[in-house]
Image (cartoon, rainbow, N blue to C red; front, side, top):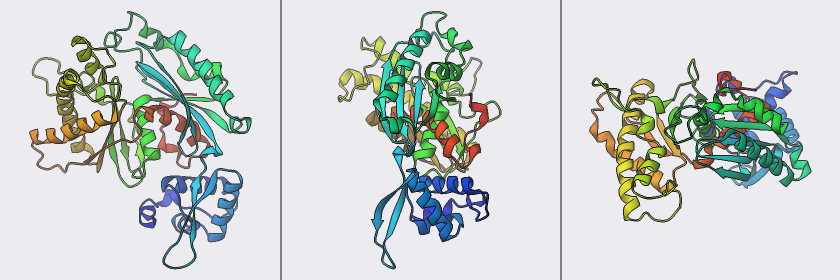
Length: 406
């Protein structure tokens, strides 16, 4: 545990024993504990550079405020047993909302990023009027379902949604003109007005990447490229533990990336080669329902044939994107997650690794590929981290302001 913790220490994560930095040191301790999924007081002292007395005072105060709690007692080979200090999930809560092209989710998420409750809605396309009515009613239900003491700890709402929700109307077969209604909607202001809760908005793929960054134990010791396979395809870039968004907030927009060099015609974009909407179209063309791959049943012959064809094309496109990205960023990991069911995601990742054999990789070192661990919840959990991070986060540059609205 200490080896991992030592790797993440830098000048921005060292505390101060001076008077007047109480809030910074408290946020520092919360961040350190969160990053390492629990530490002893001795570990916290070593990582932060604070005195043992200061750490004890801060930890005890945060336990009294119910932001931290005592965990397991670890019996070492030398010295007294040590008690692990952990985030208290009930110490604060936020609501994460995902607004997607096929579904919406509302999650109540605690300080330790654990989901306490959920409400979900599926649709053919997001009708703005109906969807905001559902959000208003569902948020009210979420708040009414929790004890008053816990409701008092609700600090806001974070929304994960595509910034171009008004685009690609024909791809999802929405009625003409319906999606364009989203162009003039200020999502943060609208949800804040109907819920009374302070609201933030982040691009959905970036939010999913943020959730992976904030909840994965690997997050502080590697840079990674992130791909989210949803109705459309999105992504993110994490460099040295921070999300890189680019000047226009479009870094990681892999859905718009071409799948090949131009030969006189416009090459297909990744969004048409490696996204679930393409799999849906293939299912419909074969006489199956659009959600034919949503349940957990083993694939029958018809669905297996369709998935094999889709995953072959998708894996080739994703391998191309990974090789291209690695040439620029030279990261240690590739994380692939999505709303696709887990067993099919694993099959897709296996095919991506096989597709690397099609490329000349001289001069490149292939990164490790791993599946994200949050699946369909990644986007809403990422949204929930916005108000939580504003209240308790140490490094405000973790989330660039260009992607926030309030």
